[in-house]
Length: 204
Image (cartoon, rainbow, N blue to C red):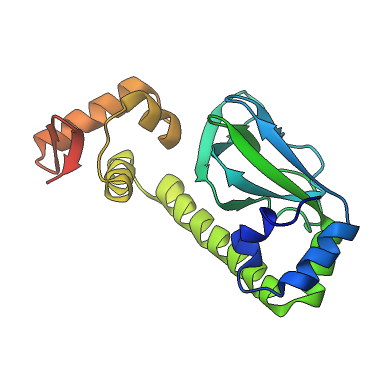
């Protein structure tokens, strides 16, 4: 296993390179390349590894028993995936992760990760920070989708992205039907909260 590229990931920031390389050389790990639309991990399946998105992008979605889909997050390299799932009691993916374009994933088994965090304090600190950041993100998403109105979610989306220029994509991410999003955008324009220009919808 070539260790140089993987050691550039945020998980290994400021770590002891020799210690990390020694563990990675002895422990199994693999690099997989995915094409657009490929399933990287499936909701409900066993999660035995942490996934390091080293290039490209992906998105995570949840699917209900009725088939309703909800896009939880869009992810761009460098990013750590499944950080909060790999040591969970249930040990399964609660989301499906799909490649949105070509992307590369390093897969590290939980025992490899256990050795890394046990032998290098900086890797442990990085891992805890990654989990904490993901938890904060999920808390914000819960607030957006469980507590906020659609109008508030639209405003939050535009504030985060700077502009809303693709209604279909935004509807997918916000988990609403395109006609519902279009109506809400029209109402916000009428209220003077947002305006539409050549780039798309922006905050006034």
